[in-house]
Length: 358
Figure 1 (tube, rainbow, N blue to C red):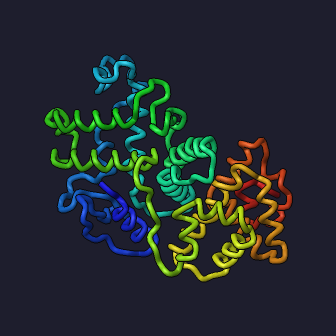
Figure 2: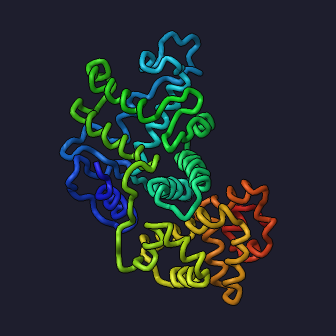
Figure 3: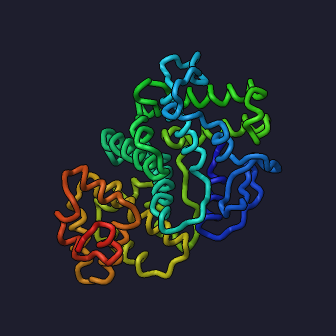
């Protein structure tokens, strides 16, 4: 399943006020009673793609005085215990909600945006050949961490997964996530009658649910065609640097001034919600692919915008408040934002509050 058309619909509903429409794939977005927008199998309304696995969430063994049952897939994965089974199920829930659309408020705005951003970047990371292989691997692990953190997951799940040659694995057991997810769906499909009382999903949904989960996993692993942000005339000048980070890195290496000029153009232009989303993507690409490996470039940005203090404040504050990436990047280099007074000088009130700057 190629999910580009599904992703286009996700972007259209979330950022361009488009209504859900029939697609040429088995899934269709529907608005739910809680104002979320979820994926369902077209012409079926029993259970959403995001909901069905929640219905089979294993009991937390920490709340069982004397658990006597074994993990569901104990025969296939004998090294798995009940805690690790629960963690793998949390990952399944995280993956299956990647393309869910929820009402945004002050308490989920940043996490919602970060999760979508990290998923998109992991999808295309293998194409970023202007980075060294070691740099791509560093980013792969970091983006996965941020993707899980933003869902959000608990601490154990956050620490539980890693990449081995681009394949996502449960680190403690060495279990391939793809193998586990495949066998899990097969188990439910083949023995559906054992789980029917707990499931609203019909047995015919198991195959497309499995297909989409594995396709989303392929994007987390970078093992398929990278997703692309859909084109509109409003954002056409930014899209080459969003859909192919090599173009961004090549331009930055060749002429930083041209890159800063595009930031100026974006910051000063009237924007739709989709335009603002793409501007945030561009700023975070700068953080992710440039500042990650050279934090001093933040000072270069400030110097380039020094003659336009209001514009500098707008760009620097957006860069540092749309996500917490800059904070994490500096922490990885043993620094804090206070070590960059040139940057802090241009914080607006929201940035000062987020970073506890007086």
